[in-house]
Length: 427
Ligand SMILES: Cc1cc2nc3c(=O)[nH]c(=O)nc-3n(C[C@H](O)[C@H](O)[C@H](O)COP(=O)(O)OP(=O)(O)OC[C@H]3O[C@@H](n4cnc5c(N)ncnc54)[C@H](O)[C@@H]3O)c2cc1C
Image 1 (cartoon, helix red, strand yellow):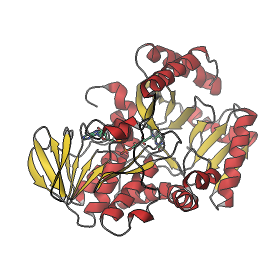
Image 2 (cartoon, helix red, strand yellow):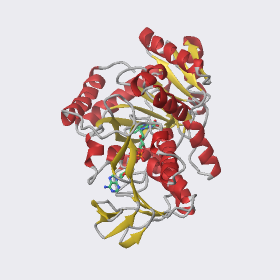
Image 3 (cartoon, helix red, strand yellow):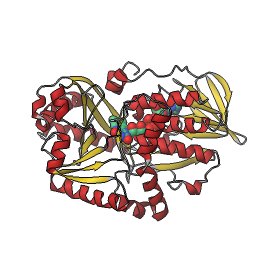
Image 4 (cartoon, protein in one colour):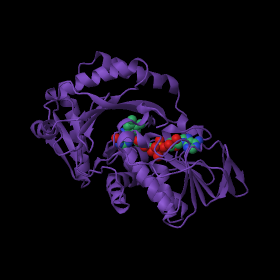
């Protein structure tokens, strides 16, 4: 994307083309202007346009340019925070609402994909959260107990069951979550965009919003070549925010995350590694993730940025780690490599912001944004349409709080990942 093979890698190589769009110019009137063309923006646009609302979506770069086109494609249920801890952090009301919404969010993605016939390699085969050592297993036991008590279809697998499902004996066990699955992330973003356009949304790319001002009871947002006036503004720029709503970015610490995609593996290796095609990741702090794409390429990722010294260090680590996990894989070649920035909040929970009257948005998904972005977009559409009130939202209204020492912490994560992968013989 934008001639950078390290931004969207495999996903750009294999996604169906984006719908044709142009840059915005002139003046337009709408009911709602949406800023940002990822899952949050397009889900909001789709669900509003389906209600007959006049929507203009302005994306600064291209459809899926942010996290939505670069991620691992694990359609997860829930958040990092343990289910039992959520009510403690958010209070009983919001805690249980968020658990309910995000626990069922993968189903919402799968249903939307089916409804709009989105071609995005959807595979609802579940996910495997793999335990590294006893401490990893203890954590997964707790997660399993807490979800099972809530009736979720999750199951703790022992080491032998895990070895059969993953194709390695490296793990002490795993948590199989049958609500979840995998997706081709950029294809999903482009498919949502196509569905939104078909429903009547006007979508413009290469149109960064540079300013917004109140004009009477309405808002006028500006781009380099024009302006859109609307009753509502949805800020869906999240971790890739560029001005004017810098506070959304300042609240997040960027955690870099890379992926390498192998060439398609042999049928024998494909039958051995993840034979049922779940998406997988592990319990380490500097975690690793792996999943197949439709053609049998293994997508293997971890924390770090593929730039400067990081490129060589992370690539060498990925080769070692893959061989350690799956010795029979040998010296497999990589077909693509890319990385992106995950937006982390202080408590690993997302946020709902009212940045000004009728200027609203969700953000801060902490590396779990496919299903949440989709259902939060649907929620924004319901709020704007007056079907629900702010008090019915799954999160309380909060003001963005800038994180202190942000640049220092971002540098620390990037360098720390290099140190971990340079020294690490571990997978
Ligand atoms: C490497 C990586 C791996 C991840 N893995 C997973 C995973 O496996 N599973 C999962 O669920 N989540 C994952 N995530 C998180 C997930 O990708 C994000 O949470 C999600 O894509 C956020 O969607 P969004 O629509 O809110 O924001 P984005 O997709 O980031 O979209 C924001 C858009 O806003 C645009 N924009 C910014 N400023 C302006 C402006 N001023 N005017 C106009 N447009 C603007 C940007 O260009 C961008 O396209 C991962 C993220 C990364 C980076």
